[in-house]
Amino acid sequence: QVHLVQSGPEVKRPGASVKVSCKTSGYTFTTYYIHWVRQAPGQGLEWMGWINPNSGGTYYAQKFQGRVTMTRDTSISTAYMEVNRLRSDDMAIYYCASLNDYGDFDYWGQGTLVTVSS
Amino acid sequence: DIQMTQSPSTLSASVGDRVTITCRASQRITSWLAWYQQKPGKAPNLLIYKVSNLHTGVPIRFSGSGSGTEFTLTISSLQPEDFATYYCQYYNTYRTFGQGTKVEIK
Image 1 (cartoon, helix red, strand yellow):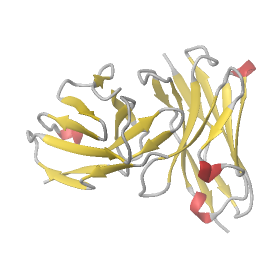
Image 2: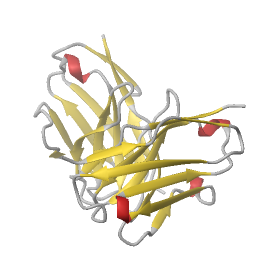
Image 3: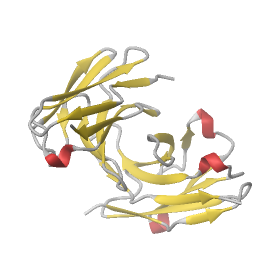
Image 4: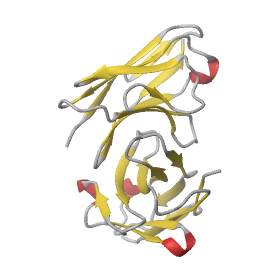
């Protein structure tokens, strides 16, 4: 079975950085893009961007360009998402998801809570 | 970028009701439209992809339709486990979610 397992909850100060990992199993890691989506407390889903695990190419939502970096390590089938210069409004659950263009391959991690507090 | 607007934001219904949620795109889109269900504390679950294709394992009471700028998710007979929040999503090079529709118990 396909599994995406994310790293544990984080507590960070404003201005710090956080890096969330997403370890995949059960399929060929380089086949499908890894997307990152976040959800602030009580709010809706916000798409952040994707990484192509095969090439390392990335595409970020305009809102996150310059502050978010997505990377991957193909040797351990793991994707990473780093947010720099954290603000209070970055406090959210961050999800990774392995998705294909057609729409029928759709698997999500369990989510990682990032708390930003001074 | 394309924006997706869902209506209503909240919907109160009873078990057995037929429920319809609407998603409107800010411009005409092709068929890259999906619907997700999310329950509190859980990751979203895919229900429908490419407007009307039922994802594996999703009950047939869920259906999707639409074209152009207007799309709908219909639950033919609401079940207790269907009380949740539903999101539409446009997907192409980038992805955009609607703001969500919470289906509550009436």
